[in-house]
Image (cartoon, rainbow, N blue to C red; front, side):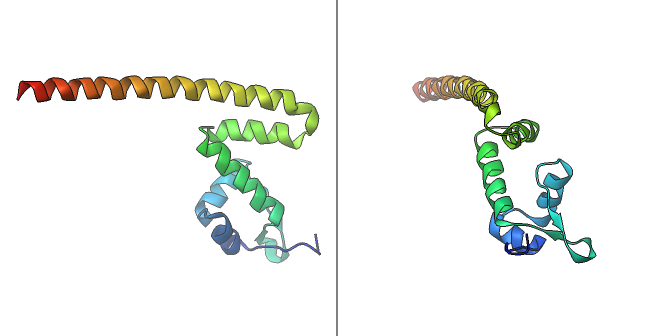
Length: 121
């Protein structure tokens, strides 16, 4: 670790776009594991920057923090968990497709309702 660049929580916050409070929250949830330096201050590496990028991508894809924790635990176990991770992603895609279908139906309904109201004018 001595050859790697280490970031303070403030630097890590700027790089990742997460607030220090969010970083601490993710740490408490077991999603981020900082190193501890002198005086037990949190220190982060480039690998952890990449890890946060993964967390944010999964979150943007609709994964809950608990689901992200499960996924990253499997990821940390290595390539033998790829089938399980593929299954988790497939299930999330099914959920998102259902939500997308529901949203499309709602949009269609609202358009129809708007037209009905226009016709009433």
